[in-house]
Image 1 (cartoon, rainbow, N blue to C red):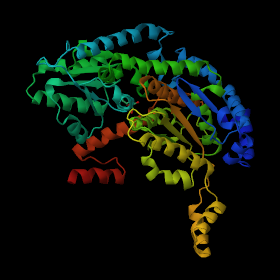
Image 2 (image 1 turned 90 degrees about the vertical axis):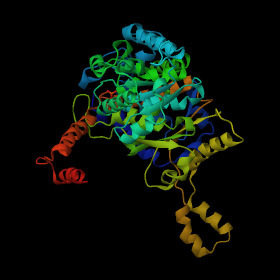
Image 3 (image 1 turned 180 degrees about the vertical axis):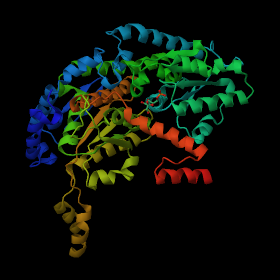
Image 4 (image 1 turned 120 degrees about the vertical axis):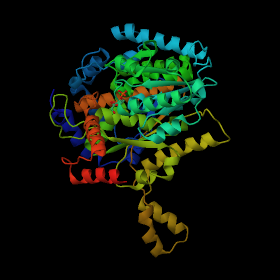
Length: 539
Ligand code: F6P
């Protein structure tokens, strides 16, 4: 395959961008009264209105051409088929097997089905107190100890599905290697009713090991005996030996496999804490939602394919408009963790500078993902979205119905999301601002001075992603939609979206700095690093 920037579709898109610069979103809507209907697609109970993007029919056709020239479908088939597409780690990428209800791969038929059965049986035994605390009490507080993919996705699931929690159960997360995280995370826990689930694919992650040690120490300090640990500590890992060495009973180990990337592991046994919290039926609904999105992604032509459309329009801004970031604006407090999870899914996947073949890329790859809950963001960073110098394509994610209908709150919330996207589209030009100020009786001098500050350029692209209500199934589909969006972009940029070597160097140097904090040996360090070591030792 030719290099991304040497594909003929890339060159055509560059020329097309010059044409698109001659028009704007207002013009595109004026040209076609049916634009919104034509550019709205739905699947898996999620509707994507992408009409407020700087695209026309030709843009879409060229983006499809780009996908075809990049053999996107071939790469999708390879992923689902279990081929080794994570080249630098020589691994298959099979998180889709974790939710494959059709059992099309040997993994889905075998280890995935077996592990799900083990999770189900454990969940039931915690619920009916067959697996109970050392004094016989029911385990009702789950503490998820893990970081990265062993934290972000799982936390998203439990936060987003709070209305579905089993009565009487609660969950805490301890991720950071910060004494505050452990202290606050364990405050008020009752050792007799607490179950610690150590979630670590590698069982070698510093933060998780330190926090697990602290949790075990606390547990023993409350009067429990070493032999009681087996009733209160279980682990999910590929590294069963390390978990057993830590003191986890072999019976209480849940398997994981190297073909599940950390950031895609929420669907696996890593979801055990959430399965306990939600119950197995609800957890399976989340998997079902993801499975439905997998089928949609695999089998739907690009122009109706939600992840493909999101991925391709993202590439359009990233590589032709030089957009540096992508905002995820959730208008549902239950989804507040989505931007955090997507930061890992997207930036750990596509924050890469070499192609699968190891050649340095001369084009931009993964965008900076950021965002948060609306309307809160409207009183903070939306200023930059509307009047800043940067183009920030934004995804608005909004349910039509709230789980918590209070007075007219939800219509207000919805109205704000829609109004923000409309403001980004239309803006307000100098003429409009001037007329408005004049009509308020402002002096000519003041109008001339103030008007430029009130101009909104508009023409700022956004997607509107809506669904009736945030159900377990919709949540599964939504997360899987973004996973596949990231896959589409990585495939077209010809990078490996499934390794994460960039997190390694900092980890290694952190160990060297830790050693220097003990020994004071700063001989091989730059003067800034040495100063920081000395400052800490002197404090
Ligand atoms: O930060 C790097 C990383 O490897 C992530 O990809 C992963 O999700 C996280 O660390 C946690 O790893 P583990 O589950 O092995 O503890």
